[in-house]
Image 1 (cartoon, each protein chain N blue to C red):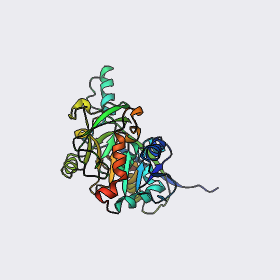
Image 2 (image 1 turned 90 degrees about the horizontal axis):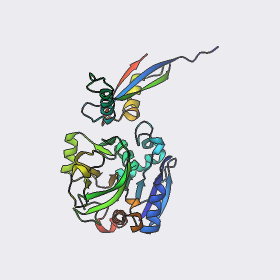
Image 3 (image 1 turned 90 degrees about the vertical axis):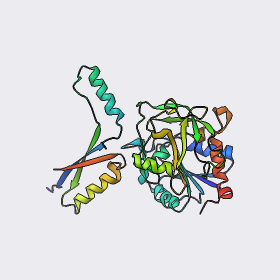
Image 4 (image 1 turned 120 degrees about the vertical axis):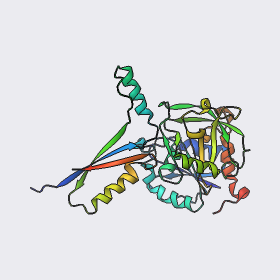
Length: 235
Length: 84
């Protein structure tokens, strides 16, 4: 599997994602510059965290119109695997590749800490290496991660099984205290209807070795790396 | 002397009703703490001033387009346009 990591001006997790894929996952990976439209033959495109274009206007709003996204959108529409982490998730909702919006954390503070996530579905290219109900530990670092959508659209997401991760406590219980930003239904990560585009606020690329405090994020990267073989991604 | 003629449009973007505005809530609480207790709700927003070439064709539609595509996120925000 070849991974491509997009670098927007203001991305600051692109090297973390690159290093996690290259040195821990040991898969082929290349940086994709925002001004290019070349995905370099990537099987998986990662939109990393950071503050693309200074978060001007709204987080992700400007990055959506960068040249590389002109290639990412048709790639996603034709079944290509796309993962947006943190600011990358915001770019995906702004671009319409994922539903909903990420609004200001309900407590207004930038939140930077480890959280626990409950895996809500293992039937995705991103989570097939996890068990449903499994609790993963990884860090968050965001000020605008409060997942919002209108009630009817939230119900549709839930009914379609598009909620991939929820904030939980260490035992997997969905408590208000475990929700770090006010997200509706403790939603931490979702996928599109085609189940090939993923967005999550927590940072799996920062949780790939025990020395980092957790290696649970590696399970998600490993799932991606073996996705085609295991569940036959339509491409 | 050649004068470039232009007109202006002001775009107001605000959160849709029902979308939580934690910034507005915080400002409202601060007002109450300051003793201005009659202010029971604050909703925040932002505005943009656009300077536009004169005689630009199809202007109303073009303004609506840039509002819906970039200046506002229609999932959570609404906008109004004032031309001058």
